[in-house]
Image 1 (tube, rainbow, N blue to C red):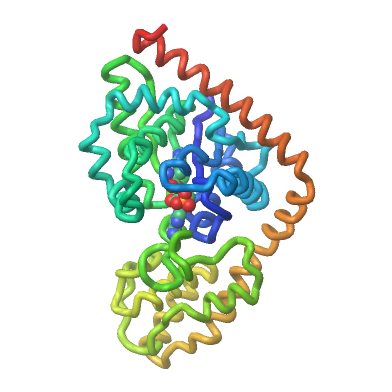
Image 2 (image 1 turned 90 degrees about the vertical axis):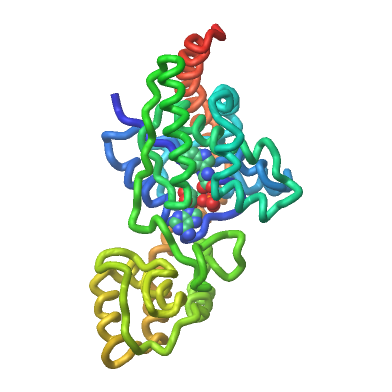
Amino acid sequence: MKKRVLSGVRATGKLHLGNYLGAVKGMMALQDDPQYETFYMVADLHTITTPYDPQELRKNRREIILDYLAAGLDPEKSIIFQQSEVPQHTELAFFFSSVTTIAKMQHLPTFKEKVKQYPEHATLALLNYPALMAADILAYKAELVPVGIDQEPHLEVAREIARRFNQDYGTDFPEPKRFKTVGEYIPSLTGEGKMSKSIEGSYINLSDNLETIKSKIAKIPTDSGKGTIHPAGKDTVYTSDAGTVSPGTGALMSFVHLFMGGDKRRELETQYETSGIRYGDVKKELSELIFAELAGFQGKRLELEANPEYVDLIIKKGNERARAAAENTIRDVKEKMGLL
Ligand code: AMP
Ligand code: TRP
């Protein structure tokens, strides 16, 4: 039997470059590997764990699917679906909540961040976020999960739940691992923290045109371009706290590494220590390369927007296939839990 893969993105808007490099590229690599059966969903239920607008949710969950398809997720190879259309996820999440302690959930960094962001909305749904995510993955007994590094604590919870369930009930859940990509941590264009939809000025949208990309890249706060440099490691991408260069320069170096290659990055590091870097030229070339990677995506996105029936059909079929696969797991779990 093929090994299974599952991943998802919350329906909070269109994809940005961080989602694309950190998650979607990994999703594509695995869909193209015949060893795997791949399930990719839009996590609309996770979206309602923080304040949201129902109209926006309906619109956004479709945007994510359009972005998936335009980026290259292929309905012939992957099962593409909507989380809330597969009720087995919520059912399994409830079962999982019976082996998950409140104390543990309260200590997760993602929970604390969201509570800080929305102090009036520290709800049970938010607390249960990791159990629902574990259910998403384990409903399919998926072993690999292509997501960015920020999701690691959630995967740790999924592994603990799998172990507990296997011990207590004799189930055979695998302990899912993160599938890492070179873009597992994409820095913010501001130089501080990671690229994120909730931080204005931090991201490049996959739908941005060349002019927009140029102006966003031009705004990365670089330093004087000359001095001593201590990169994090010869083959790793910079994070904002990696070296002695300014955080903005570190972010720029990461983008150079990702879009122009490690050799180009090393060449720039040498320049930094000798003649100095002319950021204007680098930023222009980098913007063009980023746009070149996105141009195909944008063309395909327009085609898909003009073909709503085709997209509807993909979603409908995906939902059906996902339900059938998840149903098998649920039946087994209910039996072992004494509910059948
Ligand atoms: P989110 O938009 O937070 O639901 O994230 C969707 C996916 O994109 C998850 O797999 C995240 O780990 C990934 N992701 C989001 N931001 C970044 C980033 N700055 N760098 C790498 N991956 C990211
Ligand atoms: N928590 C993930 C995020 O914020 C989204 C998500 C929900 C997910 N369920 C998942 C990712 C299952 C991978 C597998 O990005």
